[in-house]
Image 1: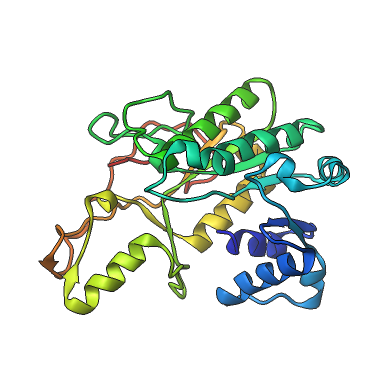
Image 2: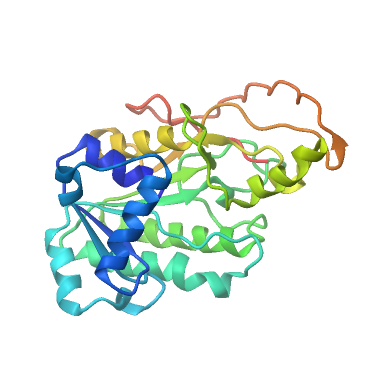
Length: 291
């Protein structure tokens, strides 16, 4: 999403895009933005490049290590804020992820509150309870539950709780929950550092389909679909009137064989039973089911 979201915004709008990047200098930050776009097969023409400002920052640290003048300028000039940054780990606990994944949301909410700037937050369907407790996941904020076992889940749920409180106070926030984001539909180009793909890449050459229980029942969604639908909702605020939580996920769930069995075609996924939903203007945003 880090490359496809700004690229979609550049193609769909005339807006100037400010990208916060973990870097030591402005040239390094700009180089990282262009390297990410190039890696995913996207290049900017001069006009598009002129509309992108790379800002060296660290969202895990107080004030994002930005001067107060810069923060004030961002609060005054930004028309919308997209929070897509996160540290993703299935091994780390909440305390080590809190700064990057939760406190960053708190700080951005403070920035957005200055001029009531809309904030779009990219979350995850893993904040939902397991299917045995709640087969259907409503597009609404969720209370705490026993299924929040891992630090990453907990950090994203805690951010959603902050956003829920902000929404109750009248701040225009929107939560976009994603399943597992995979390569675009036309090329399938993926993030080689993703843990799941590392596992599959190790097993498939040996004729073994290693499908850990952690990935059972996941919802896989092409990144271009997610970027397109997220930008659509941000540009058409009337469609978020019944929000502010949306699920960006296709209807079919991943199924596969148990670990260490010889690879065979997986059974065809069963269609999911759609749960109760509120009327909305974008037909791809449906309640999703969790494992």
